[in-house]
Image (cartoon, rainbow, N blue to C red; front, side):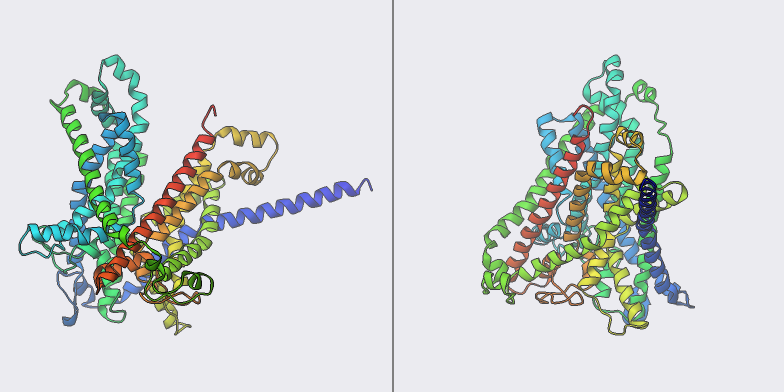
Length: 600
């Protein structure tokens, strides 16, 4: 009997080590999912673009004329439209974002700055389609009445709203950089006798060169990748605009418009060239950000102190206060209009129409004139996307944070960042191309459906889950890992028994934030199976309804005031859902940081 115990112990140890090796292999495979996703998207875009390499085809696509009926499929007007729209939106959003960051970090009263910072974070949780709906019925009529000879749907309308959309990205990046730099300058500022505004403008800003460039790059990437604002507000004429009141068409909107009506002709084939251009922009932005991260910031403080620009603090203060007034006013106008139009519609009839709520909820009775099928479709969509993405995202994040090293780690991290920057319309285009490939190979009846939309949304939110898991684990104190090593725990035992429980709040916050992102996206489902009037989905291969698409469709195609009321009611419902998820994610993430702050 005495010899049996060591034998059993060795056997148990062997089994445990084999289990650990298997788990590490699974984690490594999950981390490689982002690499496979990037390779798959790029491969599909390249494969379906190959016909354009035939004689005469490439010249027809790289031209300035879009006339499909005449065999002219030039995408350059759309490329120019995307560049003009994104650049002009950034010209407006960047100074406003800088002003807000300065206001929050010292140029404004602290009590007001705290509320303004919360407002900017709130803006990042507002669905794009909600901005679009409110702007179609508030901003567009205002432009139409202010400028004769214009429909209101124009470059100017899209630029104004797109600037508001990307402004939180710019502001939060700059705010984060200033919060890192400013505390380390207090002693220097005190020794030089500088005021708080002088410290911020003369010392902190010159040290934020990387942050200033990163905010510009991320904001531009967000602007050029947006679909809904360009689709709903720009007018979508395939031309190069000559004034801000002219219509234009962006590449993202062009993909959505053409795929809605055509999947066979050369016009359809040109969309993959548009996709390659957008993918190239995302790649360039990602490479630029990584290049910034490798360069040391060489700002020289003495140059700014020795030759200060006259009135620089006054100019910065003026910009800060202007931003602090204009941005909340614009947001209040849009959301106030939405509340004014949407609140009177909220009732059981809005969701269930003439159907009894009990029959619809319990017995599955069909609802023909309410939002319940769209709500149910959204819940199914988010749940399935979470089912696919959460295990892979968490496992990939664990591997990158705790186990990955060398070139494989750098490649996986690069692909995660690149996947996070890919425009969502490309995920939809990828899903649509996958269906075409299945039809042409071994599944002729393959079609867009709920399952396909959920898979594409899972790819969309996967990098958010990986990054949130990495950040939650990286934020834990190193003492925890040292304690695990001192107790003789293996690396996987330390992760499973100590690190994951300690980081659970931050990880859960990332999951909730990813669910909110999946709930509000419209561009992906636009190309992968959503329709109006599908009713309650009976199977994963059925078409379905969803709140974001219902809002987009009714904003453009409503026939009666009642249908428009449905759109505003759906917008308020979606806004409440996403903001609740966003607030929960913030609370969970904040709780994680508080739990492991030194001294607590």
